[in-house]
Image 1: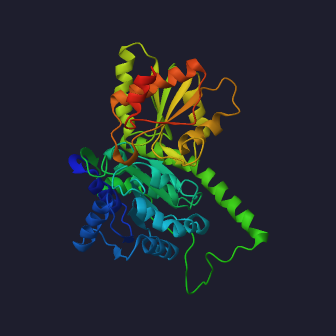
Image 2 (image 1 turned 120 degrees about the horizontal axis):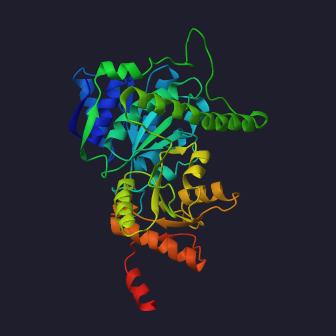
Image 3 (image 1 turned 90 degrees about the vertical axis):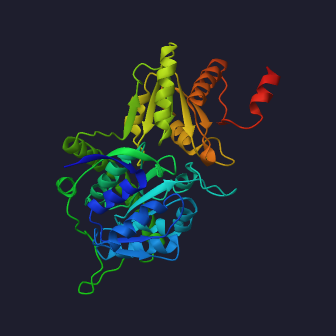
Length: 400
């Protein structure tokens, strides 16, 4: 029977991987992802997980080994973070084209420089367009649950793509939370047995990843894009089935007090729960504020997002990464593009917050809502605004 225990989120993630009975875990340590693979290596060493644990010499090699193992027909898991994900980039781009269903957890961490081991979303946003399914978790229970869901999604023959399960580094990865851990029998009722759709076989030779001549390259990329867009249906099916099985329900887009809200705060990841506290506070003041959280980042859930923000006057869109030299952060760019053609669409005011692990507090969310409403009244629409920049408050006071 499932039991609720106090457990570090990274270790709960490793427990989900153990319950999935993975075959191969190629991994390289990097903060703040390390506890996940440390626990998996211990589970393998103690015989609690019958898998090949491969301690490779770099993250580039980790992803190379992951694709090789998946191509041979194995159920594969790996994890990484920040510079490690960046080092994987060359091989990350191969996985979708090869249609290999690797599951990878990314403990989101700022990209250098300056050097930072703390959380933001710059690492995953650098991989925004790599062709992987990408989902975001808000708390430890979601990390455990969605890691299990990930295996069913990507191994479905309608998908056969890799997936990144994102959790905020330190803010989630190193936290101890009460999490309901399933037992093996319960997990087996949900997880489907692994069966490789395509595999390298010496008795039936085939090629994976041949040269793409100009006559075929565009069609190959179109097929990958169609597969990624088509995966949304499977994600929704698996989230629904998980909810029906265990009573914990998830959606590709989540809302909190968004019905009838004039201002929508848009978030991804663990800061969403702080935003809920801020909304509760502002509601007592009579402010009509709600929250929309994007769980499925790729493929982007256009219809669900548009429905969630319908009727709002303004969206305070929170990015946790900077698009240097651009017109908005990656989330705001997506949202503005999504809403561009719609009549009566809400304005989108982009705020960049929480870079390099800086706290995003209840008061910060209040400030962002106030500023979004101010910009709307004035008809001012800045590309984006960085929150909590040293010296900015003094400048604003002087100008006032």
